Image 1 (tube, rainbow, N blue to C red):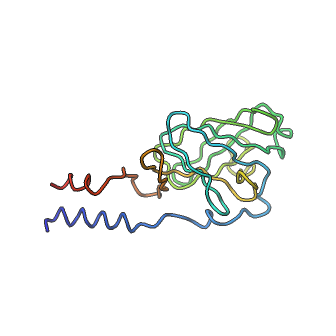
Image 2: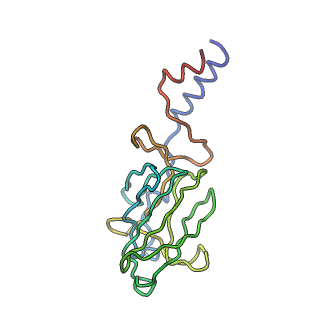
Image 3: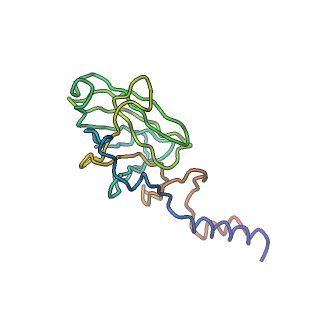
Length: 191
């Protein structure tokens, strides 16, 4: 077998053997002190991006594509912003890999706020959302909860997708996202 064929086979085997990356934060509910009222109720693509979810038994994830922009909506904001009547609130989309992003959400109804978020190209893993933050400080505000109960966190999760927005696959930090290829397409590279 040629050296480049062995390399391609080893790379393919290593890729298939990678487990889905999950951490303790993806499966544990929030401690009682962090549970707040707001819920992530909608993630809508603005520019043809894919979205899937929410999924997860405790912490839920909404799979989104890096490089695409989404309108993110939270409701049940009653524990700050004058009971959800303020015109805007500040949020932080947290990421240990690319840094935190501070955004402003606009009130669409009492207790309901929406903002547009361009998922960064280099995003990986999950990003929890803090709302009613102050001056971009990550230790302020509350963590946005699940769409249904609000009792655990809700995250945006950087993922790749197959054809027609199928098969969302989380992007692990430290790995370069790849395009999905059939075995026939892969063989064409090594002829």
